[in-house]
Length: 400
Picture (cartoon, rainbow, N blue to C red):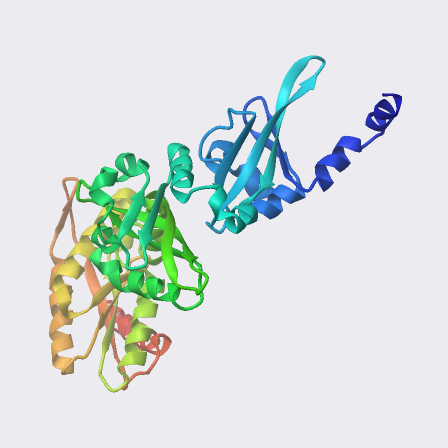
């Protein structure tokens, strides 16, 4: 007893125990917040300490850790399932509980080596009871053999409506080719594959799901079945699409911005070097007067109306973009002759010069347009813009 007390009284004993223990350890405060994690638990689940401590504990563990000892299936950072024995130990100070210590013993490999110890259907049931994801298994030919009860809350189906159906029945048609490519990799050399695609909800809508699939093979390497863990990433995909849209579109007019326009024009020039394309640079005459005298809100509304008129005038003949400020650009692909472009320029001028009625105010502006022709004036976006800019200023000077 005396020896035990001397050991425990040594400075840093608990810290060394925490740092070097072979099992993963997480310290949790009374609010259920993870406050520290040792190297072993980071190695088990594949996160950095900063990443792990930002994840809500319930999300990491697919539920709560109410029992002092339990077996859990927890996804690795890369998506594959890990199986652990969890032990929850209260941390006491002066007779009061101040937190909990959670220890994780990774038993994944031992389970794989002794598959008879845990029937796979029982494993699915255990996972499904608390999972916030959809757990499924399907045969080598893509037929569902199991799906967790969470499918009802997340996608509206009962398990009976899914089991026995082909996986492809629930995927968006536009994702079929990518899904087929992913499935083909199972037969090459991959045992874990991740696929992100749209899944059909029973109400007819599609939700984005990121599914990690682990392949189970027999001793000869033949596929016995595939296990999938799918999570709804619709909000993340929508956020990514919004960010992408904002990066390539003007926030006022919703037209393609300068970056997207230059990209599209360069792609056009690279893909059809022998074809003739026309590029227009359009500057609004009188816009500064409107902006200065009626305010930026009226100015923005005017830009939106100009964008609408330009889009209507161009139609399917080309791409309209906002270059910046009061300048717009147009690219017309595969033109037959310059006369058609001249006619289109006149239509644009008429459309812009017609009065605008915004918030009860009648506003009149005009348009100066510069034109450049590929092959004749250059074979790059920069050269075509430079030529069109010079032509546009020449047209503007003629108005003075």
